[in-house]
Length: 248
Length: 270
Image (tube, rainbow over all chains, first blue to last red; front, top):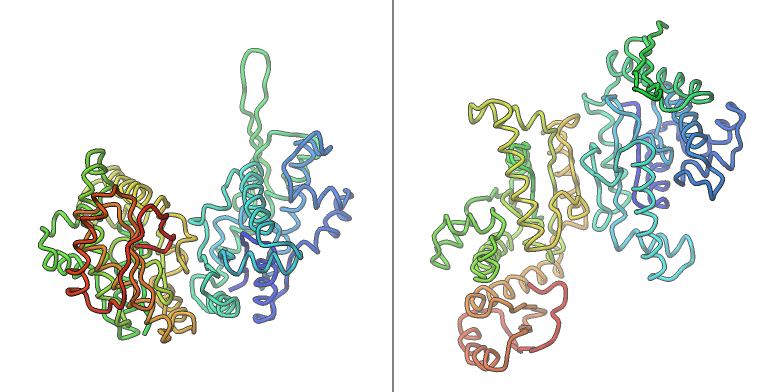
């Protein structure tokens, strides 16, 4: 096993479980702490970058769609590059939405459950129970909206995950044990093919982030090191789909 | 002494998982037996019970309330069957019908659609489009059934403690996960949990004995104290009161019996 991607409906729970899984496995922990490095690498504003992975584009917030897409592409490219290093627990960087088709990446969703999740929010934020319930509901709606806008996937659709654990009755420590137990499963071992899929994803993301600096409305795919860029060129009469292929 | 329910879409390998879990833990495996129990106990044809717990209610059925009766019978039989613990149930709606018993480990098995299509094609010897249509129709019925009776979506995985996707994870991996979870403290049958299960069994039996005549009642039971909640009119309440002696005599485990008319039942009422 080399990659655990952990997400949750409650940030506090997500961080806690991911950190414990990394600790138990002795894996590298990749979380939002990496955003400062991404900002420095791509010479973008770190504050704006954090905002981009939290909110949808808005002129009111001075975050236009084009810039938002570029920021997300930078994060994606950097995260995928990091994941190539193997033995990583990733959290808080939306990797569950863009790491697709990589068999050695296990996607886990941890549901906070009403009892434990809301209690964790009450403790961490020092707010009342009612406020915590309202906060969690708003946060869930916001995350759903964000995931659909960013990757056209509903992150609350739980059929997208390999394993979903509800903490209503299962203790977080048991959840950590359950997740780490998968490390030995044959299907999650790194294989040449799964590594190739990941490196294709990383390559496509790298090209995408480079092109989004000056272009928009593009779709980049990579296969066996060959990159295909799809874009739509419009004129007043028709739309032409132009495909350019590059060998790497 | 855990109770495990395994829900799944059709052809999602849930049965194979349930069988292996039962074998590994040396638990009793139940599914259709509950239908037979309910059919014998309440003298209802098995086919009608099966339809009631599988198909969504049609418009007229919503007014005839027959489906509520069949579900109450089925639920009562299911609770009776699982109350002793050490059991794996892999039939319909276990996660909803056993809601309220704390030590029930609710598991959902999902499988990739292509894998499901392949299973149905092989099993029923039909082409892929027919197999896909059959699966989608079955999923639609499940969804409608749960939504119409419980106002919940069966694909809402927050209803389950553990949801496992049989795609990258194998049946054996799923079995390991379930056995591991079943062994944790939360799902062991403490004295308190067993008492709650027994109370639920009493509530289910009271409801099953009344539901045909009083389809809108809800029942709770706490330490053997049974409360019957009723929305009906005065003459219905009078009619219900006459039945109470009969219930006291025929259902064991009742210490005290009360009716509450015009009071909203609590969410955990059956």
